[in-house]
Image (cartoon, rainbow, N blue to C red):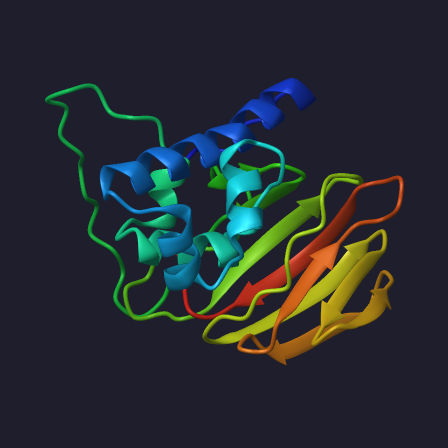
Length: 207
């Protein structure tokens, strides 16, 4: 499920980020939903959603999870290539109580604008944590602060991260971390000139 890890050029990454917005627009129109309706159901502003659809802004996975729920889709739907007509999907049996992910295993990776998300564990139907390795490129537009169900933890491995919680900005350096109830409006942004790498754990699982 999802996309196998890919190392592409900056242009490739930008194209994949734009594809998220294009799919968002297509899924929204398929449901006959306006941007205002999607805004009401997802909790994100009309202006921000419009920028994402036009490829001007990127959207984080947690915010995208809210959009996916509003459109009765999964997060993976926004990244997976459309399967050829008539091609069935094979569903593997998932472990019940634990997963084991080896370093050499192909990772599932999602790209949205300036942010690359690498899933750090396999699926487990009764596991609620979503561990991620997030690389945030410098530049890009800052996302709207957004609240959602669950909890969120972020630990900075490399670089710096500006993390806003309830309108207050906190600058995190390598070794710093933040842990919050995700219902509080929050957003993160890389305002430096180099890539920031973060280990993030969120609940509930994103897909």
